[in-house]
Length: 425
Image (cartoon, rainbow, N blue to C red):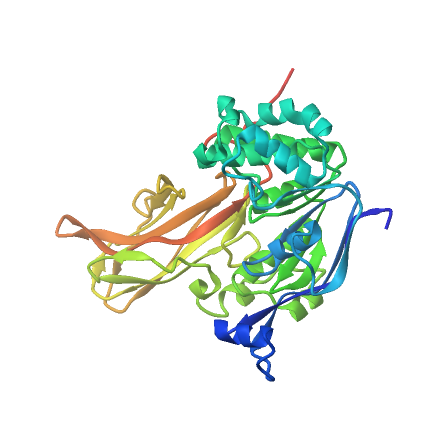
């Protein structure tokens, strides 16, 4: 155990689900002989270890048990079965500010939280200046927390948790808080922890951060540890899970050559059935055409919503025409999550001759390019338009139909990486 900071051994977490509150009451009072609940395992026989000085990420789809295992490790929850051993003092960034008293001032909450973590008042006195400097909320530290904006609240909570010099840092989706400048401070502190040889365990949906910071990744799925290994391999499996393409038996057989062929990934069904799509698609058009299938293919031929920065990828769509049309225009557009159009193109801009189509004809359109956008999430819109009697006409347009997550280990300024080649002489 001396080599390990955290050891998780055969951990189960079972919740009792009742159909009615009265069933819970009857069972608690011993008024029912029959079992009134259904068993739901948030975690089932989970095992893994984290070595001292190691940075381990936990990834998985929603409901896979990521946050539950962190809460068990930090003592917020007790396991139903199994054992967790921790060797070192923990600082946990789970629900930021969960222990804050809204009536207390910021300073009072610093001491309250520090005491809850296990520090003496003298130890907190020594760290107070660094905490306040990191939070950077000015005179508000002397005001009741209930008067804080949400940004100030999380800044102070993060500053308390990150500046107490723990041996083990546990983070649950808490690195991206506050404005962009505060986020930069958070990531700088995170990198500082790694350089100091601290043990770090964190959950994140930001696959770029997982790939950049982690030595090893644990992949959970529906409460079960599906796999663990180097970040790239685990991210590749996770990408398949997101679009229901993961086959455990196939993975074992193809471990030495894990690339799915185009036939397996794209031709097994509709592309959109293997893509995470927007349940609230906005669409319109005059009905002359229908975009009936779409998806994204990565450089390995997999249909996926996640693309690694710097690699080639293809956005594809299938269009059926319901009327005779001359020279249709096919288009794609990228937006950020705020709705700002970042990039886009169409067959007219690219001088692609699309010709004439008849009623019932189908076309497959593929836009292939290199991914140079910064890491993050982008929304994709598709369109089929053209000119009828000299008037621009929308035949069918799908707004924000699906997203693309860009996985990046290096982000620069702005939306695009200029791929600069730098020479210092």
